[in-house]
Image (tube, rainbow, N blue to C red; front, side, top):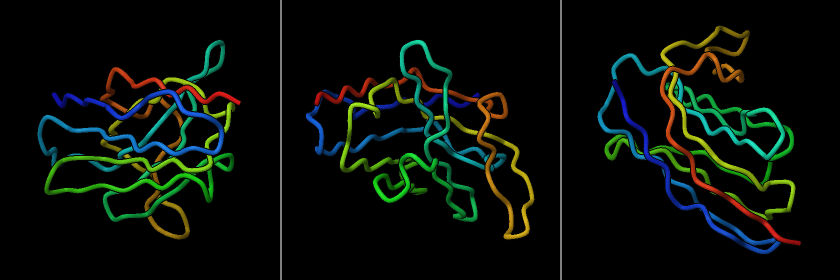
Length: 130
């Protein structure tokens, strides 16, 4: 079992920045992917950014160029730097870990669907006002 704990959420005005962190309780050799998902009220949980253990990274189109995912393996910590935030970025942000990935022509990639992820944090709220 791996426990994930997010932090760093808050309330900011449009155009502002936040940096989220997610600390894992332990290193898991089975880990293939770490990801950030978000869920707005009344909407489904969506993948925002994903990083494979070989450092292949993917972003949702809506955050490409504004968000940056990274991880510090020595600290078992995943980050999400969010810049140029807008009201559409409001939601609960979750950290997730998967023990599976899939092969693309460019190498292993992470799934974008939530049910492929085995471990989840409880989330951290991000609220962006216009």
